[in-house]
Length: 76
Image 1 (spheres, rainbow, N blue to C red):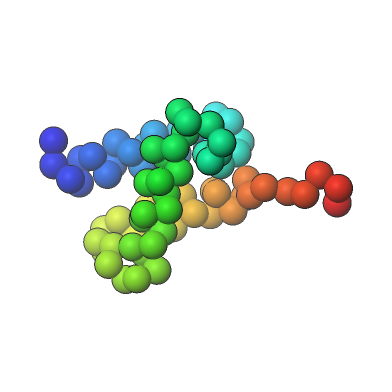
Image 2 (cartoon, rainbow, N blue to C red):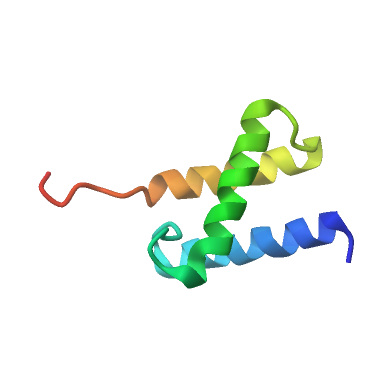
């Protein structure tokens, strides 16, 4: 499997998780660490300008979804 194929598989996994659970991956749940680390690494690559151009648009859509499900203070 090529790097691009692995990236697409992980992208689909994270996207499915967000749509199913209506929340971002948690740093407190070990089974979600891989998704969280993948998100952080790709966000860092995007901000540094090192992300492949064909991935940028898809990843921006994913970031929009993560913003939608951003943690909210329960006391507000």
